[in-house]
Length: 250
Image (cartoon, rainbow, N blue to C red; front, side, top):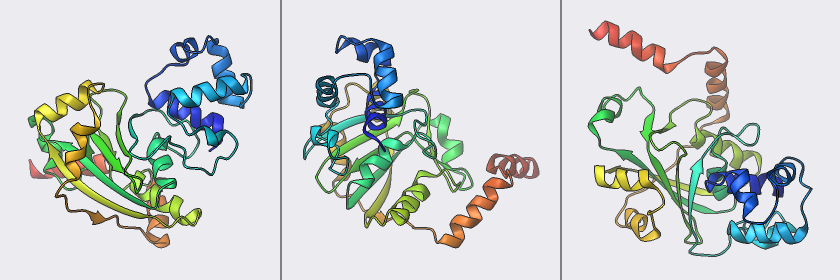
């Protein structure tokens, strides 16, 4: 990912529009838009100011292989928004974290709310996750949630499944990483806290990692990835199967 694309990702996933972000630096929205799309149009001084505002490691301006975040024990809220780069269906923040770490722990937070119970009880449904907490080997913690506060993150078996995509990226770029995962239920109070978003602090989410058992993420084989592609190309939908089963049960 190029620097301008990464800045666009960090800006949007931090909740800034181009217009209100440009105003922080006395720039026009069109200048920010031009830089994010083409990589030029603003000064190096402005780029340095932007990276500092977004807590991006300023060394990345001259070397995009460095760890992109500012420091160890870093804490960041990310919103999973639209896909900014072809081939990445809105999960770029997650991929950016994992690409630069050797040991990553993910906790999927699922809401224990009556409105979601019917989804949680059916194994054929994708896992409805409200937020993902990520901790890397530098003790950095990231919280990821959809931009719309009522949306779920669907982590099922389809090709766009980010857990499958992570494995593909690791293989294609010869990245040796250890990925561990845990699924935890959250109370209505915790759900409301994550929904409000801004009040969420490191001390609110760090306890999730204490006394938690993690499992290694299953890495699909090349043959299984090919099968997933065939299923995707055939326009097969799990939702259609669920509707069919529902009718038979009734």
